[in-house]
Amino acid sequence: MYFPYFITYMTVGFAITLVVFLWALKSGQFSDQQRARFLPLEEEPEPAAGKASKIRRIEVYALFLLAIAGLAASAAVLVFAIIHGGQPAG
Amino acid sequence: MNPTEQTQHTGYPTSKAFCLTSLFWMMIATFMGLLGATELMAPDLLENVGWLVFGRVRPIHINLVLFGFVTPGLLAAAFYYIPRLLRTQLFSEGLGVVTVIIWNITLVGAVVSLMAGYTQGREYAELIWPVDMGVVVVFVLCFINMIMTVKNRGEQVLYVSVWYVCAGIVLTATTFSLGNVIWRPDTGALVGIPDAILLWFYGHNVFGLLLTPLSAGVAYYVIPRAVRVPLYSHTLSLLGFWSLIVVYTHIGTHHLLQVPVPTWLKVISIVDSVAMVIPVMAFLINIWYTAKGKLGAIHADIGAKFVFTGTIMYFFVSIQGSMMALPVVQRITHFNNWVVAHAHVGVLGFAGMIALGGMYYILPKITGRPLYSRLLADLQYWLVLIGVVGFTIVLTIVGLIQGNAWYNGEVVYRVLPQLQYYYVTRAMIGLVIFVAAVLGFYNGIRTMFSNRGTIAS
Image (cartoon, rainbow over all chains, first blue to last red; front, side):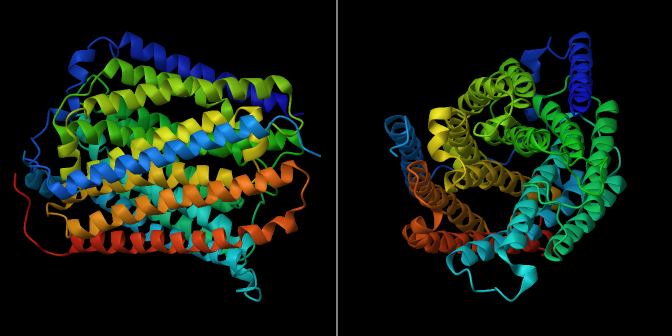
C-alpha cells in the first residue's frame, strides 16, 4: 500500500508551496519588479571588460557552428523516430 | 566596500571550501567516467579487480559528478552571491565550513561503500542508508544557513536567484529523502512498480529540482553582472521559477512509458514534459535578451563564457527531454546510449558548465587575486565543450544503432561489434574531459594559494 506515502507528500508539498506563494504575494515580492531587475548591479562595478579580439570572434563562430550541429543532431533523431518509429519491422 | 575589502572582511571560507570540493571531486568523478568508458571498450581490463568492475565504477562516477563536482560548484557561487543580493552577511560561515567537511566525509563514504560493493541497487539512488543520511544532513545544514541569511536580509525584495537556490535546496532535501526511502534503512526501496515510480520521481527531480534551479540562480546573477545590464525581465524570471516548480515535479514517469505504470501518470508526465518549454524558454529568453548585443563582454569574462555556453546546452537538453517524452520518439531512443548522451548534455554541458563558470566568476572575488591563468581556463572551456559535443554525437549514434536494432527484434550481442569504434571514441573523449578537470583543479589551486597581488577595486 503506497498511496498514503504519495498522497501525504503531494499534500504537504502543495501546502508548503501555497504558503510560500501567499507569503511572497503579501510581502510584496511581485510588486517592485522594475527595481528587482537591477539588484545584481547594485554592488561595486566590475572592472572594465576588454574589447573583443579577433580570436574571440572566431570563438563565437565556432560556438555557433557547434550549436547548429547539436540542433541538427536533435532534429535528425526526431525525423528518424517519426519515419521509423511507427511499428516494429518484425 | 571594494572587492578586496570585502574579501578581507569575510574571507568567504564557505565558498572557497565548496570550490575546492568541486574542483577536486571533478577530477575523481571524471576519472571514474574514463575508467568506466575504458571498461566498456575493453571489458576484461580489470576483471580480477572486484572493487573496480564496471558495476561499481559507474555509480561512483554518477554520484560523484552529481554530489561531488556539480552541486558543490554551484553552491560555491550561491554562498557568495546570496548574501550580496540580500545586502547582508552569510548567517554562519562556521556552519558553512562544517557543512563542507560533512559533505566531503559523505563523499568519501559514498566512494568507499560503493567500491566495497555496498549498494541499494537503484539507479541514481545507489547510496546506502548511512551515506543517504549524510546527504540529507548537509542539505538541511545548507538550508538553515540560507534561510537564516534570508531572514537577516537588508534587501526586502528577493532576487530570482535567491528563490531558485532556496527552492533547490529544500526540494532536494525532501525528494532525496523520499526517493531513497530513508524510512526503510535495510533496503532503501519500496516493492514493485511503486518503487519504480518513486525512484524516477527522485531520479529526474535530482536534476530538475537541484541542478537546474542552482544553475539558473548562477546564470541570473553572473550574466547581468558580466554584461553590466539589468535583467531583461524579473517578472518573466519569476514566471519561469514558479512554472518550473509546478511542472517539473511530475515528469519523472516519462522514463517509465514502456512499463506497466498507470496510464494517467504516463499522460501527466508526457504533458508536463512538453510543458517544460514554458519555464525553459522563460529562462533562456530572459538570459539571452539580457546578453543581447553584449557577446563581447561575455567572452571577455571566462566565468560568464562558461555560464552562457551552459544556457545554450540547456536549450538542447530541454528540447531533447521534451522530445524524448513523446512515445513515438522514445520507442527508439530509450534504454540505450541516447539517454546517456542526453544526461551528459544536461549534467556536464548545462549544469557542469555553469558550475565551472560560477566558480571562475567568483574565484578572483573570494580570493582577492586575479585568476592564475586565463589561458588554462580557456583551454579547459574548449576541452569541456568539445568533450560534451563529442559525447553527444558519439552516444547519439550508438543510441540510434541500439534503439533501431532492438526495436526490430535484434539481440543485444549481435549489435555489440557495431558499437566498438564508438566506444573507443567515447573513452578518448573521456580522457579529454579528465584532462580538463585536472587543468581546472590546478588553476583553482594556484589562484587560491599563490600570492600574485590583488585585483583592482
